[in-house]
Length: 337
Ligand code: HEM
Image (cartoon, rainbow, N blue to C red; front, side, top):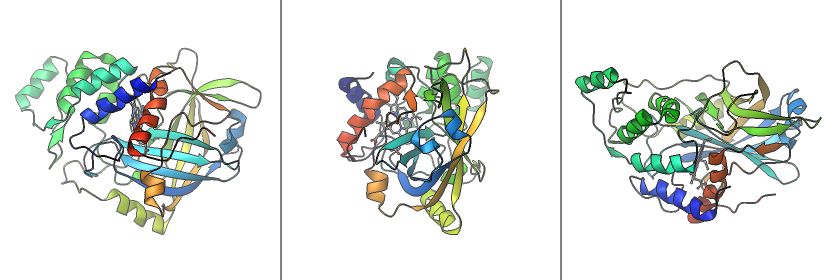
């Protein structure tokens, strides 16, 4: 499990890449919005997992949607990974977190990869590659750089592409990130918790699983050729929720023998059993955006009996890194209970 000095180095490595410092705020996923809602487990969920929130009663949730970029500038219309961090508030006063992004795989297998990646992922002034350069890249079986979005001024694309060209394990995530675009709404993106977790059923059987949120309204991105709007996601969500709640299905994919359990860069085969574990209903933006958006501190290790972490080294490193980041920005203290 990651220690606090390693965690500090991880957070410092992220901060070193920020185009602009954002003191007192998250070093990544800086811009976000807190939302209130509730979760109802499906009838079958309790057969697969004994955790409190899968027993069937209505569970209050707090969600924070975010843009992946670090720094105080809000660029909703840029192509970027988005985050969805969910806290299930359980009846006995404990809580469980599920942190997910629009990437289905990660670009690093372990902490060493992550450090190497952050060194090359420094944002540079954006440069449009010439058509000849693109053809040359393709002839060399390299991924050519994508054109910047209109009005986009910086990108970490060049360093990341060369990293992916040299490290096969990073290619899937880097490719996904390259074509990810901007969602028309936070409620119209699918979010993946990426890591494997172990869940326990009422008979004591433990299964490796991966969780993801599927939007009931469907996935939709903006037109990449249109001039992007800097700020629309919070307002869109507010308007949407004023008319009707937004819903997500919690899907749980069950791993089988031979599936990668400790490597977040590796997808599982498409034909795995997927169970609908429940429905999340989002009702309104949180009234107190400071407490329930900015100061709230999520952690993928805030788990409850019935769900355990796998041995994934990235998942282990995140436990302390999020705590260090929380301390640095003075978020709400981590409570294990
Ligand atoms: C070694 C790998 C990683 C490191 C060092 C890292 C680091 C961080 C840090 C420092 C924060 C800010 C935490 C805070 O101040 O509360 C953060 C936020 C976040 N990370 Fe990671 N992260 C890693 C991997 C991942 C992965 C694999 C995912 C995908 C599931 C992810 C999704 C998110 C999301 C969605 C947030 C925003 C959470 C919120 O709204 O509070 N991260 N990350």
